[in-house]
Length: 263
Image (cartoon, rainbow, N blue to C red):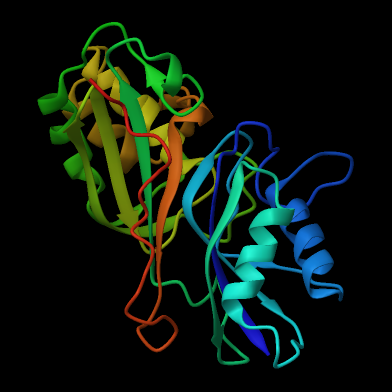
């Protein structure tokens, strides 16, 4: 039987999602605890890879397992949350068709990047602190260039291992929240390093180092060296993964992060 598992995690102490030798990752801990709770080897496949220090308020993984009929999904979630470290939490578990795939069946993903504009000791590991407010209007003018089917070569890591860099971006913009700002971007797919490079370059617009038109030129010329440096990982959350309705029931995680800057 194949299952979808919805989870959240604080990525501060993890070297990203994907299992790697001699380092701690979210997938490694999840597989270890699932195997312990279900008393059988379990290997998960995530909807996407988050980098070192990046968080997720809604990640989805699938796995295959044979469960006894006496072990229901609520009990599995309870036992799994007790076994997992406190910076990983599972939210929901449900069966899916045998060929359902957490990565390839995802129709859209949303990332959010949090910026706090007031000092907040509780947000140190979940947001970027700026001591001066950026020009939000200019950043949103620049972000509008991202909407549509675009080649994101300019905002990708050089060794990303991608077959192509075309992504269809449905939403991209900055929004005010208590104590700060959040940048929200939704697309059908993301190339490696894309969101942090976009945010870093948009913040250059917000600081007056680039104009919105120059940002658009960087996007369209597909020149990596013209983009600004990547924003730090700690402000970034994978906040929502969307699937066809037949793979998920009406109850879907809201994608709310653990941290929201407060005034």
